[in-house]
Amino acid sequence: MLALNEAVRAATARTGATLLDLGAHPVSSDPRLWSDDRLHANSAGHERIAAALAYTAGLPGFDDSWTQPLPPAVRRRRGEVFGAELAWTRRHLLPWLARHLRGQSSGDDRVAKRPVPLPVPLD
Image 1 (cartoon, one colour):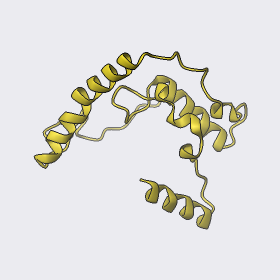
Image 2 (cartoon, helix red, strand yellow):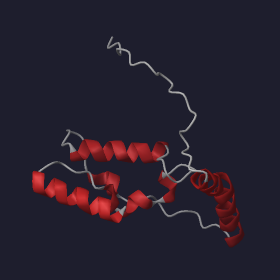
Image 3 (tube, one colour):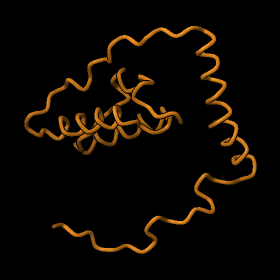
Image 4 (cartoon, rainbow, N blue to C red):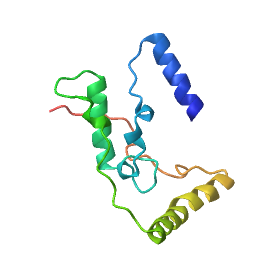
């Protein structure tokens, strides 16, 4: 992933494309901005990403406040942290490993919500 990020940074520098480099901002790794699976942003994370995109695109009314850290997190006891890690491992990591070992993807055998592209009404 680090190599991919560096390649994207190099390509945007070379071409002049605009890049929203979330990885360059420590706030983007705050666990409170991520869903339980640790792969997808939660509502607060999506809000930050939207603000970052608007700022990067130069839209009026947006500033770099999205880069500011969240307030300090409530400190959890070691047992709570261990329990949460164990629950995440059971709920997300082990099923992923099992699928991976069987050569399956989490998207296998899923049907598209809208398998036929249709026009989107703009009214």
